[in-house]
Amino acid sequence: MDSLYRTVRLIRRFEERAVELVRSGDIVGGIHPYLGQEAVAAGVCAALGPDDIITSTHRGHGHVLAKGADPARMLAELTGRVTGLNQGRGGSMHAADFGIGVFGANAIVGAAGAIATGAAWARQRLGTPTVAVSFFGDGAVNEGVLLEAFNLAALWRVPVVFVCENNGYATTMRVADAVAGSITGRATAFGIPASTVDGQDPEAVLAEARTAVARARAGDGPSFIECLTRRFDAHHTFEHKVRLRYRGDDELAEIRSRDPVDVQGARVPAADRSRVDAEIEARLDAAVAFALESPFPDPVTALDHLYASGLSPRRGSEV
Image (cartoon, rainbow, N blue to C red; front, top):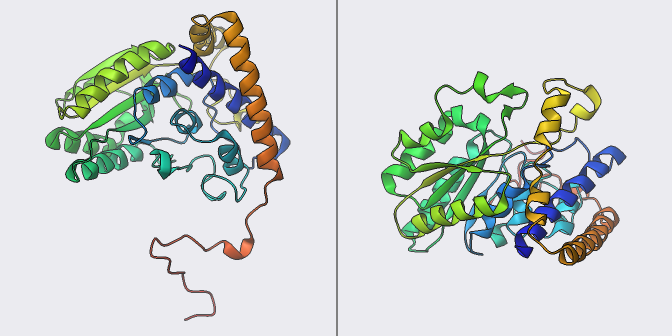
């Protein structure tokens, strides 16, 4: 209980700090806040081992943190510093940490499903007992690349768990206006076992994820989990300026009435909760200071790391 609370609280306060850094101009370009959806990342990643793999989305900070990334290096990445997870080159939507099994966030809707499936299949071929999880939103279930990943995973019994974070909206479009049939029906059409879980309850998500991960690890192939969750904040912080009105005040109040941090916090003794909160604040104070005191990359290195071989692209003077 304490570890799940610690994770959801860390993600919540990290995202709130990140929004503050967007407003101050230290994070350029804005972010897609994960506020309200913390139970999904916390519950799923708690079911994984250190060698397991995840792929993430444009709204991916929570997934990366729940898998064990250093918040200081993550904030340094968001602020574009050389001490970031990817030397400031990945930013909010492309953060990765291969050392802990984070094979990257991905700004292309649905694309990470194929990456996770391929990574899990490759490990399977090597005889390594690795499970991969692909996180994606409800908007991804209409993308062809994700359906192709379902097909391949089912045919080859790939040890991958597909996790749909259904927060009710694809940007500003309601699920009911975008998805024919059901979200779980996408998976069952390929013979993949699918379930729907309360995505505001970390323990409910963890229980379902454990079942899916155990199935994958036993060689029984993929599973699909639809997590019904709520996005408390904007699709993107740009909305803080333009004030889009696709959700009314009553809906926003209802959305915030069930907070995953409070749901899990209620299971933790008050003294323990206060202690965890204080520890997280101190950790994030240090993380913000680390990020803002770190240097920016040298512009001379802008073309580095473009090729896995180490080769550099031709300069303008080289024909």
